[in-house]
Image (cartoon, rainbow, N blue to C red; front, side, top):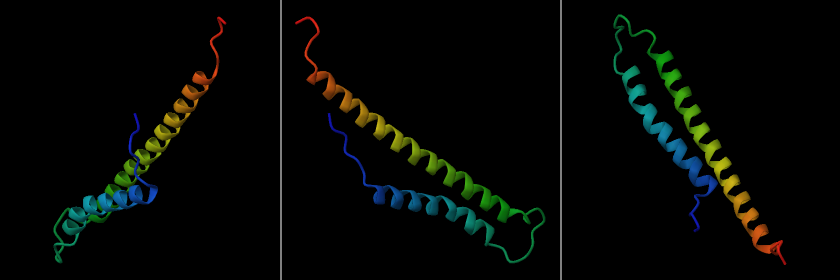
Length: 90
């Protein structure tokens, strides 16, 4: 069974797009008011924290997908080696 893979450039493009989409509401929220509302002085820090968390999440997801692909290739190589080895009983 062959699982289709997405190219590295496509993964990066999808990741950047998702980060941008997820960060836009916070950016809009942080820039909506020109007057200072009490308690909203730290929205910039909230935005930076949110971006860091999402970037970390997508970096981890990318790392795990790479590891999964490496393991899948290694399993396929081991199966090919097992098929090439003659049975021990002969």
